[in-house]
Image 1 (cartoon, rainbow, N blue to C red):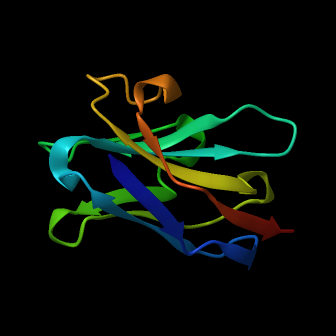
Image 2: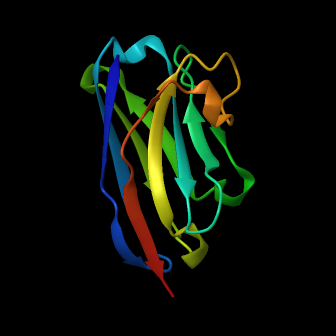
Length: 124
């Protein structure tokens, strides 16, 4: 079992930055890939970014490429999502997830563990 706790959300003006953190506990943190998803009101949960277990390769949805950056610190059992040049359309609840996704980084059902989410609101 893996427990995930997100933090770092908040209210920011358009063009601003935020860094989300996801602290993992329980089973060995390095056992799986880590992903970030978001869900806006009335919309489905969508993939944002992910980082692989072994090589720390990173993956992003097109709308955040060049603005968001995912990283992980295995020693601290923490994964980060650095968000820059934020836009109002980035407003959502952001969730981190963990699992052995076998390459399917953007597929929510591949992740076995989820955090409770943290709200990010970007004002125009």
